[in-house]
Length: 485
Image 1 (cartoon, rainbow, N blue to C red):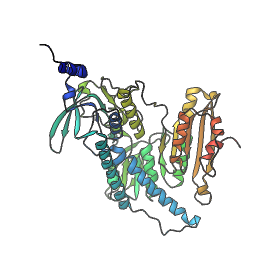
Image 2 (image 1 turned 180 degrees about the horizontal axis):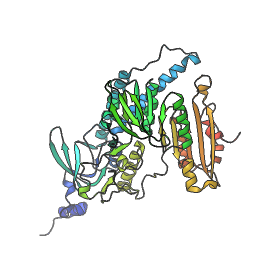
Image 3 (image 1 turned 60 degrees about the horizontal axis):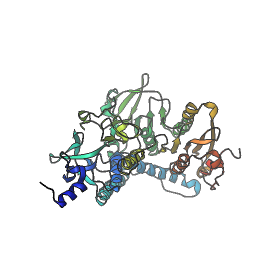
Image 4 (image 1 turned 135 degrees about the vertical axis):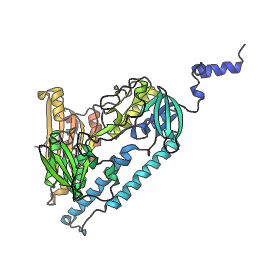
């Protein structure tokens, strides 16, 4: 029969969606984008997609914010702040400021920390509600390339949702290496934050970001601390000269740093302590063992392989430079890909993905070659760009020039306690373009962000030289480096 004018108008407006099998637009359980995981990657991908007026939902069974908020960056940084306050108070008398016996109340810190992380969860819930991002509480599993079943373990309810684009951002959990006999005797970096008391002696397995940061903070609590790793340096992504400076300082403050020594076994003694076997026949008895030996991607029970998504041997999702998985319409980002395990990486990769899909920019993606980063050690370290070693490998020894300066921050000039500061600029010849900025010292954690802007913008050493310094600060040494001596 002849269509009415009204029917013709509807057909023109809805276009392909009126074709057989394409009635998703009328389905209340269909979304333009679904993110499985409500951590940093999933949340910020969804929020960015919503800015492009898309229908979006986030699926997660846990509190919003992920491990960064609840068992990573945020609680770790709060502990770091507490230890820095304590250390500064201990130096107070040398400045003429006297305190009576600075001490740390672990339960108070835990209460403050837990309160803040829960507040962040409620803030994220509010932000999603205001933005119009739907939050579905439950565990998501692929039942089709464009279909996810959500199961709520508390009620046993199930529902299915469909999406044109589905992003896997389920994050990671602490790795507990089964190769270590007695690994069950160890606490991990999640359970650590649930401790109501702290041990007198602790052995930290792992010399990466988390292991080294925790070792420094625990030592500041006056806990006898040992950190042990298989590598020949701590925090391997950082410039070797910087991490050597950190290791020497840590050892000077009483931390036992053990390198190139795998842990083989952890056993409980009859006295309730733990004996750690490491290296070639060496042992150490402690009150607790913290395993910070890496992370494991949360890709189990998601149905990824059932829909054809390829995984690496370690369980991470195989993706290209644009976060595409091996299946069209399915993407992955953040810890679950194993690329660069940092919160801002997941957030930015997600935002760029949403812009590529919905913002009309087909080339939008995160450039993984310029990733600024900080380790909240004592003292903190910061970096952006190539290390000296990497630059030499990329450009050749004769095409690289390094500027460095080592000094004591003015804060410590009037105290008997001397904490080191070391700054490095790695430059590519002949124009001395700065390709790497590396630093360790007081305040570096709040300093490196600005220098990452300069590096991203392509600044040269001449640009640094032409920048007026701010005196007296540590950061001025970056722009005066090599000019006077």
